Length: 205
Image 1: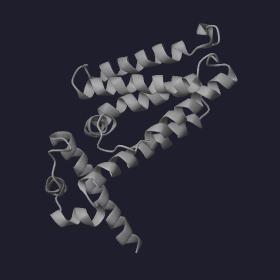
Image 2: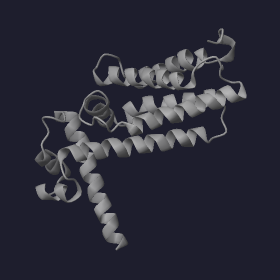
Image 3: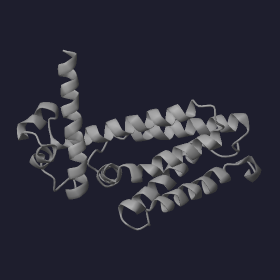
């Protein structure tokens, strides 16, 4: 039974990976279920054994990717580094995803977060904001992050900056070599975490 379950998981993963490549190349609307099956090298009908529709394929790509991202952020949060360093690590993980898996980032940006394909399925995105907010709040508690700012808003600003950089790379508006990605990471960290430093605190609202 275990071998059969593992085999099914492998086929499902094969189909999801193929779907990412097809969606990235053709776009969600233009892609057909047959394209995904052909890309995966499997029979057309096999896809319907695992997914009810093309939309469910996209939904699965989104959910599984975002859940893994939240787990990664939480693992950073549970580490021993001070909160500002944890924010730097989160920025590095998110931004370098473009170099690791550009097709996946392209699909997430164009077909999920900036489209209405999965309206009402944004719980995972909200959870990622909450995980970043927890890091900010821990920094406020230990004095490494200024306390006169709203931690929830800070988490949205932090993620928003990263999302705009990823979008810039997806749309070809920003250079995206390894050096460019490293420069973007430093810029986000300097602007966002630097602005969160206690010495920059203003008058509390």
